Length: 128
Image 1 (cartoon, rainbow, N blue to C red):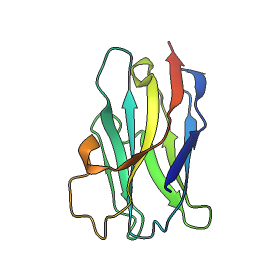
Image 2 (cartoon, rainbow, N blue to C red):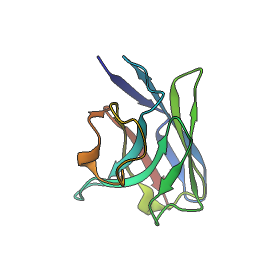
Image 3 (cartoon, rainbow, N blue to C red):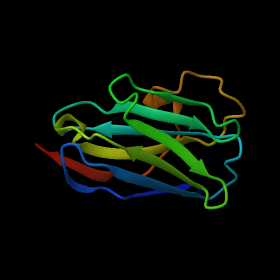
Image 4 (tube, rainbow, N blue to C red):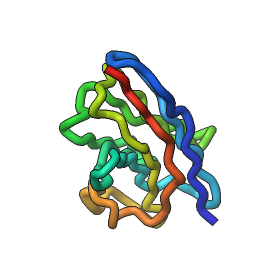
């Protein structure tokens, strides 16, 4: 059974940094695509970043490009989201997701429907 557990959220000030972690278990993820999404109060969940576990290819939403970095640790089976220069508009619940059955980067991977397992989310609050 696939399980994703996020951690690292918290309350920070604008301009600060935060690093989120997503620990994955339950199967081999060597060819999976892992993604981060976020949902602010009253808004729909939106794509943030994704990484292909095998090749390390990455994509980012325009709103976070240059500030956020997605990475993975093969030994720890963990995906990270390093968030720098945080803004109040980054305030949201951040979710980790995986397409556990992917064998290559075969989809855009910027849509919720392209992922089949989700974590429970971690709250990030950025004060101005």
